Length: 338
Ligand code: SD4
Image 1 (cartoon, protein in one colour):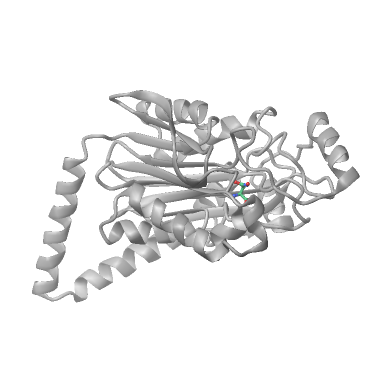
Image 2: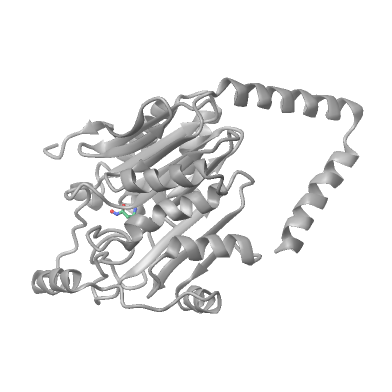
């Protein structure tokens, strides 16, 4: 791993070494304007997470940040709470299985250097966010999947466990009777947890973890472990993350596009709204439209945040120094009757 970091560092230094005096000046100028932005952002730290289960996750992440833990460790610790909670049926242990009765998990994590780690189609490991963090830290790769991800997790000392709770097994058996695939999103007011963090230094990181769409096909991977779809950030601009029907988010590179719109000057709210509109336009005559829900959250470098969803019912948890940890309702394009 240190080789990878050294390589990145050396490459960056090499580039600077080649810069002309003019280039160096421009770089200094942009460095100082970056500092100004960070100084102007007096709203840090800031944590924003999707759905009600974002509240306890935010609480833990906040505590860890205040205790001086690294931002990645703080994100991991926060997201482990819904992952380990069997009452949360859309994340980790107790999550709904696929149509063959397997609980398969997707997660990713990304830091302010744009380093990222991700696991998809991972079975039998309660905390996929922790495995994603190890992929970032201990491998030269971004993404490990399925058997390979499991093998890596076991090598890293994770324990294999049965994640299918009796409750989820019962629901799966009921579902088998009709076997209709119609993902029900936000009925229980929680789904994928995506978290974006501006830390004490003004740096932006994020993570995502989910058991994915209930009753999906075996092997299906959603947007949540895909950098650019379920999560994306650029520390110079901001970050965005998604929840909802992963197929629609992947088709539109949703989170990456939200960040690019913020780069062009849109506020987090405007950027999320524009991408939701785009997703709607691409899907209004699509077979997925009947049950389509997508929601985005976003933050920018100035500490502004926002969210927007296609349909009503989406909310997110926000934690900052001034107002503490609370739920906020997202604005949306339409209700479920449309
Ligand atoms: C997925 N976006 O796997 C995730 C999970 C989710 O409704 O939010 N499902 O598509």
